Every structure is written in structure tokens, then in C-alpha cells.
Image (cartoon, rainbow, N blue to C red; front, top):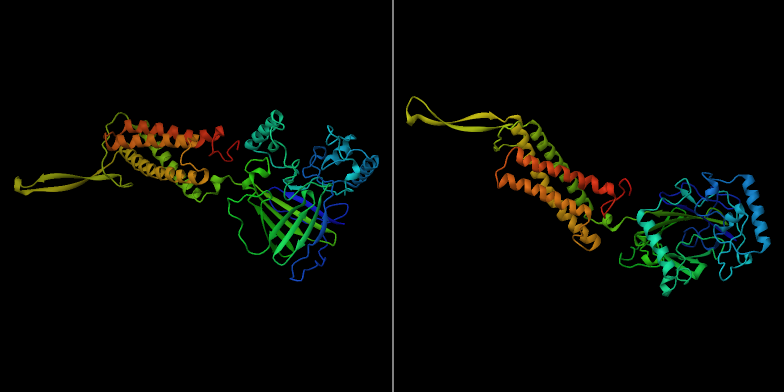
Length: 468
């Protein structure tokens, strides 16, 4: 029987191939891959995945990536003893658990389990986990949302074990065991059939057939969700690359399943070995996949930067002002002064009166006040554009223009504070300390909006910050 040997990567593609036998090793580079009549590598046949290597590395191995020769001998002997005893069948990682604990735990102690005769002969490989990246052989740390979802599901099933058939697991209902299925040792065979334009992978478990076009063809529309996703394949040399998207949320209990993307790489390296390298891409939440993302984030960032600079200039006005009255005068940024007009009489005759312009330099406080006003004006206009584009973004991502998310709420408060600042300057004619005090309040609001909300890790906008 041919071996299908799978490795998983949660972040990046694997850098090596797998070979059959007692360990995972580099394939024979001189192997001449058989071809189909259309010239593609021939992957057809029935392939088994009966390795005892679990997807995740058991804690007993620590950081140990490969088994030693002594480990291999010990594990092989223990497996022979377990099989000869004819006790309950051991599924998945249950084999290794029994090898090291000496105890065979029943898979289903309530109604009785399959015995070991139902299980295929297991193959011992040197790797201690199918996951090769991260190097610790573990799945990446789950997010808060995933932990909360698992807890809620566990509590619901405890309280409602069978109110409806929908309360029972998908596998129990024989609806889906996942695609690609990672389980080994029981119904873990694949049959691969190829044509010029299509590859079919037929999984023994639940008799699921994955039909994969290998011609240029777009994925199904985003609204179309499937139990096993929508797969598209292409050839990269001797490797069949399969990208699967459009998973149905109902196909898994994990959050954001409908945004998951799996990438598999199948490369035949001998007559009896077909490594399956699986890369699981962490899905982006809908908001981060919106075409409005770049505009919204970039404009908001620039607006906050301008408002921050303008507010700091206002603080400088408060620090340097000693009660001197400031007069707001028209001036372009950087001139540092203005032109004063005056009537000048020459020759003692009114008829000889003429206008003269004299240059008057701003004082330091007046210059700070002027720069603050102009910088905040620019920042306020950009913040307005950023909030509007964010509303469009939110509607596209979540179906609502406004949700009173903490970040949205504080952005609105920030906008109102600086709107009040400009109102006092333009309508009330405030200058100097009083508008500077309003801008100082804005500085505090920016701190809460830009840092405080993220530190608390709440709301739809808290992506990957300290605790994300």
C-alpha cells in the first residue's frame, strides 16, 4: 500500500519533503515521477495515512522534534503488544498515549468501542508531530474569541446534549469529518483520480469526494459556502497545489471558519510515498479584507498625527503664555509675521498722505498659536474624511455604518472636541489660552482613542494589540 504522509504548517510552507519508512526524510531527488498522458505528474492510486505521528506534539516529547533509534524500538514493541492484546481500538493520538501511559482508554465507554481489529496497522515515523511550524509542534495559541467560542459550545452541549439533531457533532451525524481530514489509522485512505482538467480526492471516511479543477477557474462567489470548501488546483513543477476557501461556518466549531484558507502541496517522491503538506492560513476578519481599509486607516493615522502635533503646540502655548493677550492675524505657515498698513503724512499736508506697509514679526506665543490652529484645522478635516470612509468600510464589512464600537465612539468624541475648538476660534473669536485648553482636552481624548481602547483589548478595532 502506498503511503500518504502529511505534515502541517500553520504559518509558512514546509521546506522539505517526506519519505516513507521508519522516518520522515528527504526524498530521492533522482526519482522519475510517472506522468499521465497529458504530461502531468501521475498521483493516481490509493494512499494510506496510518502514521502514529499526531498532528500536535505530545507534551511528553517537549521540544524533541525527532525520535531516537531507542524510541523507535520501544514504540514499535509497545504497539505490537497493544495490537496483540485485542483490546479497544485506539484512534488518532490514542496510540502514543497508550504507549507511554500503559493504559488503554476506551473511545466510547458508554456503549462500547471498536476493538483493535478494526484498526489498520500503524506506521512509526521519527517526527514527533505533523506540525513543523511553529517549531514547538503545537497549534498557534488560540485567540480570546476562539477560547470563548469553545467554552460556550462546551457549556451548551452539557446543558442541551440532544434537544435537536443539530446539537450533535458533525462526525456523529456522518455529515463531515473535515477536508482535508487529518485523522489517521481508521478510514484514513485516499483514492486520487486525475483527468486533464480535474483531480478528485476521494476520502474513505464518510466517502467524501473533493472535486478540484486544475484549470484556470475562479473560486465560487464569497456568498457560496460549502462543507468542504471550494478547491482550486494548479501545478508547480511536480507539485499539485490545492487552495481551498469558502468553508461553511457550520463545517467547524471554530470562529471565522468561513474565512479560512487551506493550501495543500502534494508531491510524489517515490512509488509508495506522497507527502501532503498543508498550510493553514490564519483568516483575516471581514473588516481587514475590505477595499476601504487602506484609505480609512491611512487617513485616520495622518489625522491623529496632525491633531496630536496641533494639540502639543497648544500645550506649548499654555506653558509659554504668561497672560499676554494674543491677536490672531492672517499669516501663512512659516512666515513668522505679517504686514501692517499705516497712513503716513509727508510735507505737513494731508494731500501728501500715503499708505505704507511695515513688517511685524510674530511673538513666540503668537507663532505657536497660529501653527496650532492651522495644524488642527488640517487634522480635523482629515479626521472627518476618515470617519466617513470608516462608516462606508463598516457597512461593507459588517452591514452597518455605525455600531457604537468603543473606537468609533471615542473617534466621534474626538471629532466633537476639535469641532468645538474650531468653533471657538472661528465663531467666538477665542485666541490664546482658552482654545489651547480645549485642544489640550483633545490631546487626552486622542490618548484614550488611540491607545487606551487598544490596551483594554475591546471592540472590533482591537487587532493584534498587546493582548490581541
